Length: 229
Image (cartoon, rainbow, N blue to C red; front, side, top):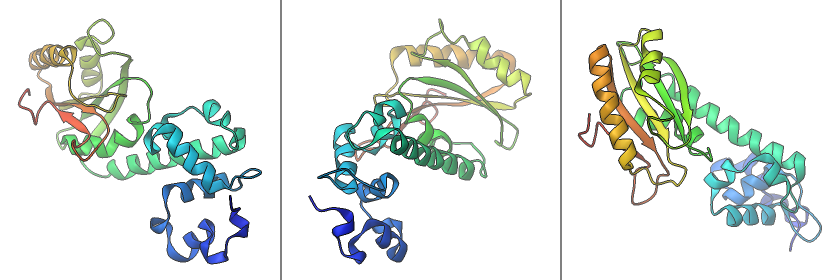
């Protein structure tokens, strides 16, 4: 296996990024830049390829805890921390860009929270409280785990809207499996929440389930777009 330092200068990932930009590099080469060095008999690019194969893609790799990554041969604590820091920067950049726009549609929700919530190994239920112009005024996690009324009652969600004097709210949760199709519990919970919101005169704009975008699915399910709200 060739070492990166044995490659010609214009073939090395770091030098190619400098001269050509990041878009032209493979994912394993970008990982190699973060890893910086490989190990005996294995280049940083090869370790990047092995990580992608082990986790079957970048999203599962991003979800892996630092302590788990550190146990991979050729990674260790320092490199694992660098990888997690890079993934978190990507999440924060996506969120900061999305916050500049109103949050009115399921696509807006995906732009705001998709990068972050797709990395979570558990389900997270969050409430977005919005003003009359659909600007985010508060976001709060209500529960972690399977969504049902034993762990997240509609009153807990309404409390967020009332506390922040929200004009409307959007409910968001993720499916770590990547499939955003709603379960029977998701459907029942949304119906009950819709009726509770009507009583309190707070508009439930949508309930969005975030999954993983593929060639067959857009990566989210919108109760509004599907006619349930």
